[in-house]
Image 1 (tube, rainbow, N blue to C red):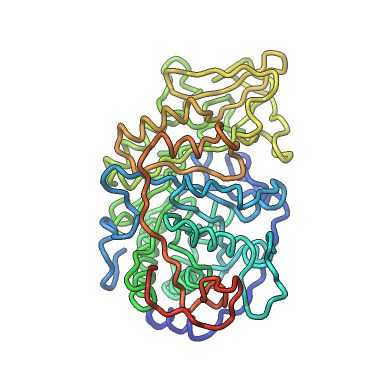
Image 2: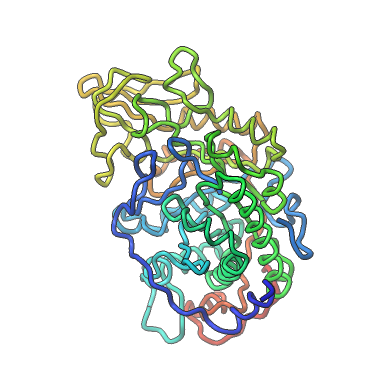
Length: 477
């Protein structure tokens, strides 16, 4: 079956509901140790991991999109991951998202079934949970949950693009068998595009960690090319040519991007979100900086990777600097019983939400710790002389330097993992980054989804949960 035919068939009939595993804490550990989210599926950086994420049928040139994917004329992206499990242990409220200071939400994560179908990883969080004034008893097949909240924020903030992120570290092993098979790959593409149409989204983000063989790299190029084609075909029919964003969660560790077909992938991508964190953690025998810009000759074990090397390697491979989002952590990697940076340690402290070795930024620095700025590698850490606890993390000072680096290297902007870890108000890294970068991408999102299976999204929330199909396929509004 041709891809266009498969996509059309999915809009003719509704996809059946699929089983899912509700978020019940950490779903498994990375080789690098742990997760900074209670569902344990963050995109990885380097330590043991470093995440990663073809052209088609009359698509626009993805290198020169017409709708807000690649900023031009000095505009920057400020991209924020929002997870569907953050409403649980972290108690995160979507009203806390700094909507006025960001350009894109990467909504994490959608899951992948063995037959290639991309599905909601938590239907209750995505479309079932009621927030605020939601009235779930109203008639019609309506979306609630975070999907409705994000769609309503899009309507009120037309610069905000919401993108579904697929995969994540724990579900990344599901990619290889699917993308190696043409039929399963077609299922992946068709169901992804249908999710965009149903949820009222502005694009897709592929978080595949990692295409680390020649075969998986080649198949990733095919997947991205077919996703680009699928999005463009949907747009031509239902969205008046709106350019849907396609992004890739990109590894920052050389061992994890060595096999990537940069040029092949880039033909289909609007941006690369460089996961420039997790350079250090429990998988190493010594403490280290987890998101340093440069390396240290004095204490090389403290900087096993660096942002600068990754950026240079990507641009040398042909990736335009403006298509790179510099990823930053809103959490810290912690070590116990150590004499300092680049030294041995023994054990990990019990961190935020009982995560070993992980404290979110809003819980840092730890009481009794002194904050240290390493001016050589451009990174912050805290150290407690009494408890001998060390935490490597980004604070306002390190984030400010990274903003300067973004401008100096002419990068596309910033990316953050993940929203629930940030501080509020004047100490928010996400908010300050937006102010520091200055002019942000203000291109409009899409709010018209005439074939969404959800009545309220199909009708632009008229009457909040309207059930009559009044929306017309007139494209971006």
